Image 1 (cartoon, rainbow, N blue to C red):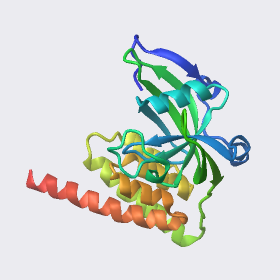
Image 2 (cartoon, rainbow, N blue to C red; image 1 turned 90 degrees about the vertical axis):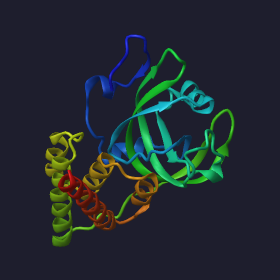
Image 3 (cartoon, rainbow, N blue to C red; image 1 turned 45 degrees about the vertical axis):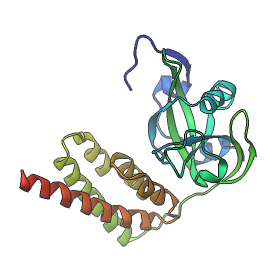
Length: 239
């Protein structure tokens, strides 16, 4: 993101300062506890293996950051079922989300904050253990089922080709995204990279996260990419 000279840096992780990449799976499992602070999200879904800036302004969310960082940098990110709700109750939040590591916290002059987070692993909320001053829950990790074989290679290639076409048609998407997708050889990472780069509706993004099978994720992405490419191509013809 672009920093403002008026923003105050409250926290930066060593990984952010050193610009290191993805953590190994064993390292991820070792730092995710089974009881995490929960940050409800409005209108956005965070995927494992992805980096994302998050603006937060609700009192409960700000309290979570102030009271848990830097001692606990791992939080559970789960999306609200209704993005109009400012502070949703536990039953108004999806059960499946992503454990994420907070790498940077900025405080803006108006009192709101901006977080830079890195999605680590898919999780399921089992039980809320705290409601005030912020949400906390018992969680379990929910790793995806990663299939192998020729069909998976074909599905990945189809996603990469369709995504390349989407980037060509969408002027706001940098060419680097398509190049990145072509260099990914892991089906899960490809699915989440493409999904996080598209303008998916929240319910579509959440449904993709909840799919256990990477094969099913790729099949769903192919359908979504085909529809988006068709719309953009038709729009270009009309113009």
